[in-house]
Image (cartoon, rainbow, N blue to C red; front, side, top):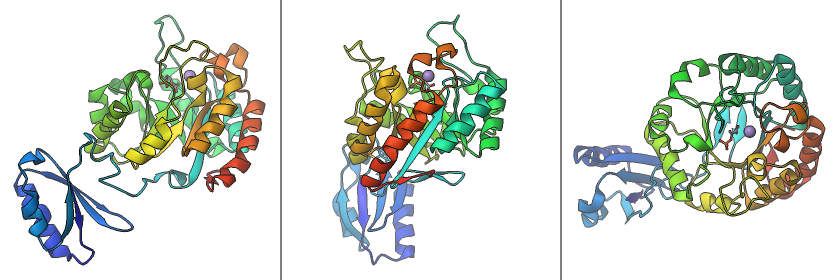
Length: 339
Ligand code: PEP
Ligand code: MN
């Protein structure tokens, strides 16, 4: 349930109102937006008497919210969420490109890729240190050493870093990581999501390959309900009947998420397509649909990559993609977050 407050409501009356709800066992979420202050009430609101709430002099309107996601929902918080990662903006009119290899492989690789993607306009550096592979015999990532190489390369290039957490057991190793990625395979690892709700770092939450948008937003809700408001959603394609692409990019996820939620959403055209030739057209589609940015895999030598070489762009190809996107970003009235 949401309660829209009158603009004239004084602070004492608002805090008495919140205390009263708390005493009745409800949680409240206050959003002071540009236009209105909205109080979201969370709990079993079926027994709440809306007439009594409306009778309170500070209340303008009461609405029941049918969506199961509350804190992630736009009805609870009409204004877009802006995530700030060491000065890099994600959301609210910025177009932010995250780039780097699927896996961290060596110091030379990471430093070269970091330098090149920064020059082309990437604002964050990615690189997997713990890799969730289908086969237990495939390269599993450099793990602790991989995080060290990623963080160092990011520092040298001046880029904040994003890397995936595959198990809470490793969380202590992520102290210097700027954004923690929850991969598609862990989107519904609820114990992990709950724990990430208690930490003070932005979370890049990727959509599960068979997850509905409601399930996706409910996973974000887990993190938000723990108190961590900094969630970036990432659409990376879903499983369909199509076999020519690795997954099918659900482009309608972008406008739907924008309608339903205030959280920023980026598109990962690399995992969606699984092939390099579709990265640019899918990136253009993402921008046109209103996405807040992209996550693109870039490798110094894709033919010899230890993971996902088939979908990884060379640094030159990445530069060309960025050049082709930049004028369109301005056309969409967005600002490229790293020029
Ligand atoms: C990745 O980004 O490296 C990754 C494994 O992606 P996803 O979880 O979307 O498959
Ligand atoms: Mn990958």
